[in-house]
Image (cartoon, rainbow, N blue to C red; front, side):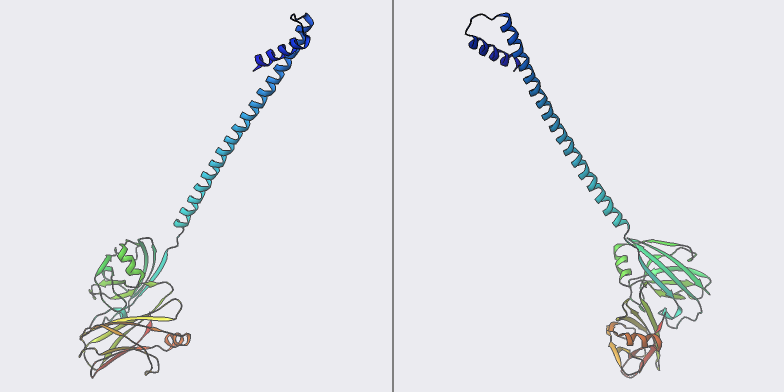
Length: 311
């Protein structure tokens, strides 16, 4: 570009002079023209370098922006991961008593135990304390079964039961636990079928249990769980070797005549199972907690009843 500009300057200069010869002065003027052209070249080069620098700065800025976006995405992913990790464990509990054992004849014992459990994902961790309990032979979580109904072994506990207990549950076992369909049972030498038992319920719930007797042979068992809001009782139960087939099963208020719920008989006969629920008011809950409601089983001629007490 510099040579071209110099040539142009020379042509213009010669044309202006109208002379075929260039004097020393003219040459000096020509050198000055070339110097001007060089300055123009330098200016153009400087502009080109400046443009390149701007382009480079823009590229660097774009790279910085991309890095910032990547960092933001990484931060967001880390936040999401922390939220997943911070998912709170679900709290469950069980109060183990002889009253909850579904056996005939009933268990005679003063033993008791309490369990606090935390479910995180598929893992259940329980801590159990016992009172007046000896000669433990085995202990299990049984299910699926609602309160006052029997089921087979789901998982076994390690002995002694007061050691921390950790269980890796299946998806179905987790679903059963969350539905309130698992219970702890501790077996002893004196009561090999179970001396104390407790339904695993959510920490915010309350379990009421009863055993029902009547004029005839056999015995009934029932359990009712009050939800966290204390607006509903979910009840279930069974009976063993009744003198006659079950015709009806009802939840009866303290006055002995007001029926709060009539249960569905899930399996009829002399060893039936039943279940149902009742919507309760604050005054109902207060009456249940203070005076107790009862569960009544009726055959064609005989009736069995028992008062619900908190466990």
